[in-house]
Length: 185
Figure 1: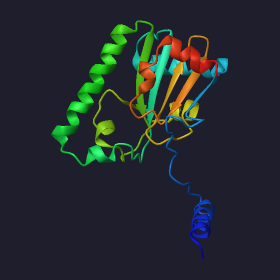
Figure 2: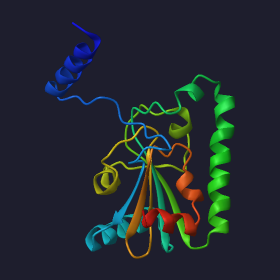
Figure 3: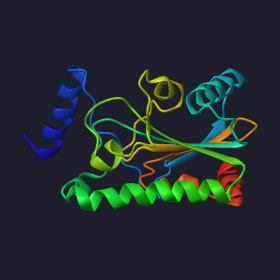
């Protein structure tokens, strides 16, 4: 049996067992890495209500959410390093978010992760990341898993941009012009 036939048989067996192959890793030039649409009025209202209840703050005009998944492999190489090596990465990311919030007065930034125990240190130890314990956000916006997590930018009118495999949370850095460009593609 040829290699192509073996791999096809492997995926058929996975499908029959109810398993799915690994999450897709979207590279920067992948056609479906970034997409945009508009949330329904009810989904948008539910999102804002949920985030307000979690954060206990008033939301700003634009909402940015980074969502990471259980059983992730994105940061496996970093996990091979000592704990003392990893902790500064977590601190640097928290400082980055803090400075972005200070610079961008009209933006609310959130980080969530799926419930579970199989996370890389950089995601497991970051206390700023909220665990989506009832999988509310997962079911509302983040069902399509991607390696390295997904981000969403939601504008005040409900239009949004999804960035798949957003390993470094680049969505937080997108300028207003960049977001408008992505919405018109």
